[in-house]
Image (cartoon, rainbow, N blue to C red; front, top):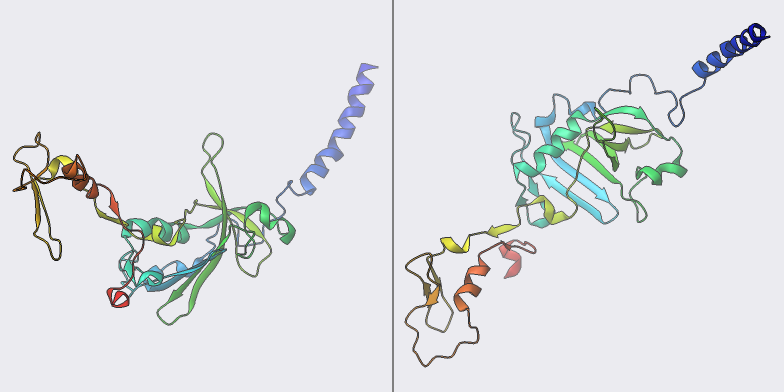
Length: 265
């Protein structure tokens, strides 16, 4: 009896194995030929130095980065057009460019537009967090476009983080690598720090006030308090710590916005 049971189970195992091979893996589907593990933006390869304009379109609108191309230094010379062509630091733009150049699909995901919202890979709109990244050369020719969705955290030993992505005009979405983090706000593309000085390093501050005599704050030793020099003894101050108030201005003094000086006249 035991021998007969083994034979029956063995016979059932063979067709089950065949079915498992023929059916597509859950949630994946068959990857289109030439796409899996191949760069999603092949136009950037060998042409990153020709990049002249990058536009990023999201639910909140579009921002534009531009530069005069330097073939050997694709991360240098970028300006934020939306903010008076304010310079974009290399440290901000370089990881984005490196990520776009290296971006490749590692696993096919949904091809159903109804499910795009789960990965944020639909066309940018009010209900989506997706971003359409478009890249152009000096002649305004498109070097590539990709819709970046939400990121996937690395889980498990040896796993790496990724980004859900889709190419415009294609239904297939992808889990792609590497993970690409875009600055959240327009001003996050630029260095917002104006002055950041440790209070202990401030020895003297002179405030020039139109229509009034300059105020001179100074101290001889780091242990001394920054104090107003030459102030009459009868003068009453609104603050008990004027020197500290002045010091604090120069600690983490950041801009809230930026405009060309010509627009402020």
